[in-house]
Length: 187
Image (cartoon, rainbow, N blue to C red; front, side, top):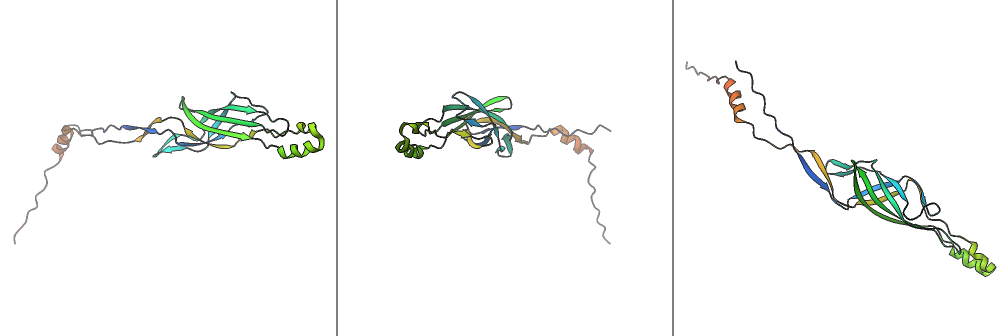
């Protein structure tokens, strides 16, 4: 008796897909950024808060880290001038590769122009000692960004049908017994 034929293996293939540029990503600041301590060019870290999904595939997992940069910082000053802080979200570290991230924010401390004007009439030049508040973006602040480029990824398994070799079918057919033909008796 010959050995039974092994079923033909069907190769599994995966589809190449892409997450389009401009896809929303929610990140959180990992540290406080303030006009008192930061200057233009300083880098800071962010963390992705929610999985970014395309179809059934998680393309950017929650917890992915990224980098942002302080693009402008001016400290609070005299005459009630507030501190102003501008930041840009730059990139994510995704599976060992750097992926562009796009997001810009500006934070301005409270000004005290009203207090300065009132004090100017009362004490004159000494009103210059009234300072505005510094610009601060607190640790944990959620920021909305967008992917700055298309991100290629391999989607979940997408099996394709493959032709089964006819020799395997012939071997299986050779082992099947002949079908029994029912006999009809006439009585």
